[in-house]
Length: 64
Image 1 (cartoon, rainbow, N blue to C red):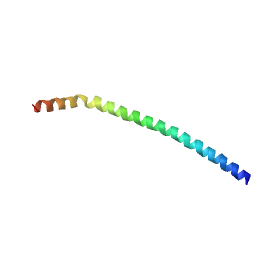
Image 2: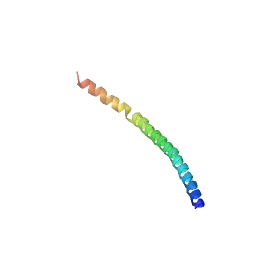
Image 3: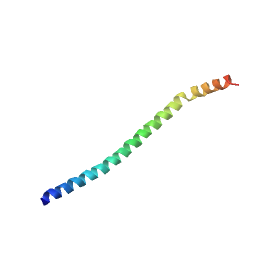
């Protein structure tokens, strides 16, 4: 009976440590995802920036 209790305590401790480790991995995954999103935004602005400026300049000329 006592060994079952000890085994449950050990397994509960391992499970608790694993949950904490998973949270750390999730934070790293979110950080990598946000870095990817930022890189895509920078790339889109660099690729389409001048054409969007031209579009707004044209629209500005249409309205008095």
